[in-house]
Length: 104
Ligand code: SF4
Image 1 (cartoon, protein in one colour):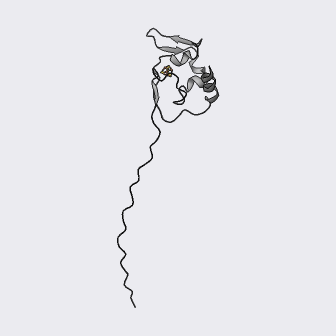
Image 2: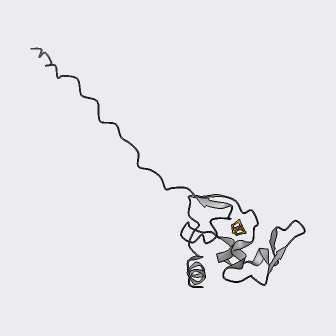
Image 3: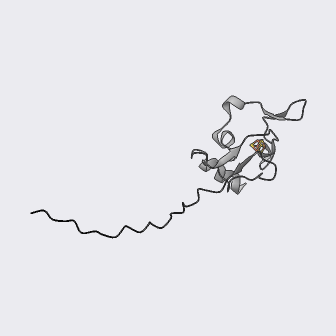
């Protein structure tokens, strides 16, 4: 319940940009911490939401971040590691300085 309250509080924040994948309609997030009264299953066993177009941000954005993904073992979304620091090659040595001939 504590994690659900955290999700509710952070649901106005953006979805992490390292989230990949898509919803496979397993419906597991709709059971946190108890089955949502608007959760339905179609004939193929895929979850649907009875108020899909009016669902709250915490449902709309789930899973918003890796830390808030409470169903990682079944969820179709996952999070890739953040950007890695670029490796920078050492600078090439400069050519030796050659004196410029002075003209009178
Ligand atoms: S747990 Fe993930 S894949 Fe399953 S219904 Fe929720 S968002 Fe979709």
